[in-house]
Length: 352
Ligand SMILES: *Cc1c(COP(=O)(O)O)cnc(C)c1O
Image (cartoon, protein in one colour):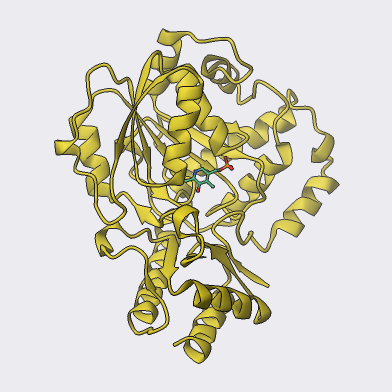
C-alpha cells in the first residue's frame, strides 16, 4: 500500500535498516547523558546545517510534537500577547493552545484563496510573537517566501512558524523567522513522536529575558541543556538516531525541493486535465506544494478513496468543513516514485 496520507505519512524505506543498526549498537538503552548520545545529538545538529541549510547561529532542539512547540512558544516566549495569522485548523489549534495557557491571543483570519498582505495587517506593539503556519496541512495552502519576507519587514518582534508539513520537503528561508518547528511524521518521513524546533539567537535571548521556568520544557532549561547537546528529559533517542541517519543519507534540500516541485508540476497537469475532481484552492499563488486538496461531489470522493485503496493507494481524508467534499494527496519526498506514477495512472484510467 502506498500512503499519500499527509501525516503520519510514507516513511523513509531505509528505516528498518537504521532501526536494526540502533539495536545492534545498543542505542535503544543508551543513557541520554552519555557521550554516545551527545555525539548523535551533535551530529544531527551539524547535519541539519549541512543538509537543510539551518543557519550557523540558529540552534536545534528535540521535542515531542508540533503541539508541544505551540505550548513552548506561548509559555516561554510570550509574556502576555501573541498575534496569529492563519486560515485553517492547525493555525486555529495554535491560538487555542496559547489562550488556554492564559495568553491574550489576537487573530487575523484570511480566506484560503487569499494571501495575507503583511503591509495591510495591523499588528499592535503589544504583540510579542507573530505566529504563522507556513504550510496549512488542513487547507493545502502555503505562505510564499515573499509573504514571509513581508512579515519580517513589517514586524519587529519574534516570528514563530509551524512548518510541520513543509520542512524537509521545501527549502525554507530560515532568517525570515526566529522559531521554526515541525514534527517528523510528515516530510521527514519518520515515525511520529518527535519534532524539531529551530531557534534564532533572538528567540533564545528573549526566553532568558522572560525567564519562565515552571515547566519541564521551559525554553530556558532546554537552551541550558542544549548547550551540551543534551535534553531536559530522556528524549526519543531512536527518533533522533533515525533523523540523523536519514539526514546522513539524504540529498541536500535544494535537490529534494526540485523533486517536490517537479512532482507538483506533474500533479498540476493531471488535475488541469481532469473532469472528475478539481483544486479546492482556486488561487494558484495560495496553493501548498506539499499537500494537494482536491474536491468533487461527496459521493465521488468516497468512491475515489475506496477504489484507490483497493488499488493500493491510501489517500488523505478531507479536513474540517471539507471532510466529505475533498481528499488530500501528500506530495512528500518519501512517497516512492512508483507510487506517484501508479496513483497518476490510476486516476487517468478510472477517474479522468
Ligand atoms: C500535523 C501537523 C501538526 C500536528 O503535529 P503533532 O505532531 O500531532 O503535534 C501541527 N501543525 C501542522 C501544520 C501539521 O501539519
